[in-house]
Image (cartoon, rainbow, N blue to C red; front, side, top):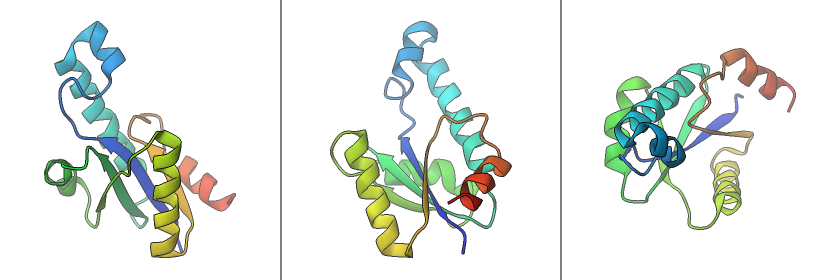
Length: 126
């Protein structure tokens, strides 16, 4: 049994992602960087592992599917709960355990140096 990877993402909207970076390079360039980082992160997840995309805001499911479904078969999409980051992560992990029985690995979308071997090492040390 492989872990479920929960990737926590924001909808790719100009001005809503990488906001500190966008102050220096502009919203369009920051959005392009965000998209590239998320796509690299998804590619790093081993192909036989399940991925749950936890997205915000809650009305972004179609937008997220249009962007990410062509990149990987079998993605599940779940709207993030309300609350701060800790509350959202806790809710996601609890829901993941209820659905799958665990284990769950949580990552963000901007992990451009993430590699399959690092995820596998995390999995084998659980």
